[in-house]
Length: 320
Image (tube, rainbow, N blue to C red; front, side, top):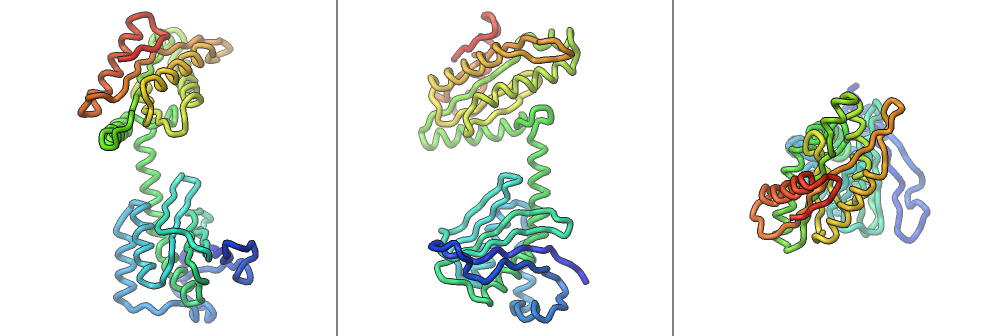
């Protein structure tokens, strides 16, 4: 027997009660070859053409969001619903199609090796019938392995855009992000600022204390930056000892205030290496989107402001 993934169906709820509208929490094995008579009675009747179309559409993408959209479209061919949602907190992914309604079914998708792929929530205004539930469960069982492939691809892409030492986004992701943010800011006429941050005398730290000390300093500065920014700000390790922070919806005054907080926090702390306290400072260049037509021109001005900060004494913030 070929086993497909297990998935756990959570009880169906109405918004006005905490009591389940289905008698109990149920769990079962969805199988590609079903021997259970009880399960086969619930199996939806799909012809060969429908089954092939379903399989083809669910395996046509490695993008998680696109896959959930395809799942929602295929489900709409089978039953009426008000919303479909997908949530995977472990990797920070979520997607919602439609508006949530009173009655809901929740499915936690788990592979035989106990790998959790996330949760799918289907809602509608009226209760789900047994035939509806069978259709939903059939479609989910056919979605799990395409979803697993999409999640593996998502992980691989994420790793390609991450800096291994700090966990921040890397230079490749910075270029993609800043291009997008400049386009959005120009379209919606909203402010956009960036900070270029460079560790002062970093080569001297490496020469005197070694590269392991240099790595510790980089991680220490990264932590200091992370502790100062907002959740909406995006941090990048641009290369070597240089970081960039992209600040959406932020004018020059706010970005300068943030830059000064980062500078003070780092200059007032120490990095420990082999029982030695290493003093670290940073220089920061700040600029805000003006008449720049492309992201490189915006970044070039921030880099020039950083150079000015380093040229005029270091451990300071300069704007351009």
